[in-house]
Length: 293
Image (cartoon, rainbow, N blue to C red; front, side):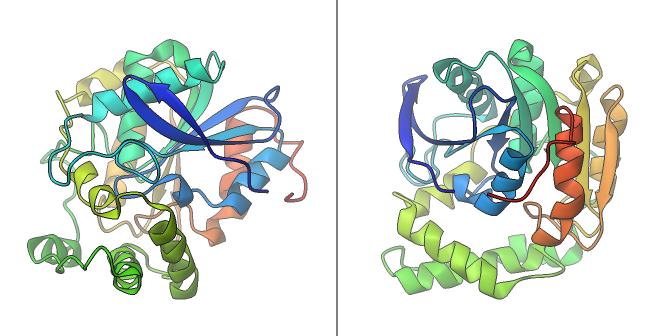
């Protein structure tokens, strides 16, 4: 189901974009998390959305995949810029508004997109997110697991970024602590694809974690009037499930869906049979869902 990648210039940066399905169908814009690229969104998962009558867009944000990258350790943009990029991308693609799906940092970008560019957002689907973040921490929300705290306190040494095998191993091990049902074979295949495709892998795995979150916006979530669906892993060690519950509670009318046996990860395969119909139902009628193509 692969489609040709193309480059779109917005806000003085170049973004690599792929689209799937019929442009006449309702559009879903996918926003990946920090350290990821458009490859975070599995093509088979996308195929199920397309089979349900959706036009799906995935793209590399700044410092990801094949999009514009910055010197390692010196990004000059923030989350608000990523939200502005997403809004401008929709304009360049001729899409007035889209259903926006964001994961982790992409959830934060999606929140800002809906707050600051409301006319571009038809609905929100937020996964592995936290209210007003990531980037802002609140004492009333549960902290990271002890394992993840230790991981961040003593991060593994970075590999030789020119050594493909070392990069793949680094990527696999970087994801392992965040999933309770870690699929090593699948992760190794994905990591090889990332290593082979990414223009500046050191920037992708460094800069998105250094960017400014800007002013806190948790208090603004009550302003949102866009239909919102919140997914959250029951076993998320980064943002324990209380973050997702709080996020849903603070957005008027938002629905909350816990995902069992799921950590801080992009919809693992065992969730698709429930997640895909929920997204299709949230973004319109789900009765068009058919076989994966």
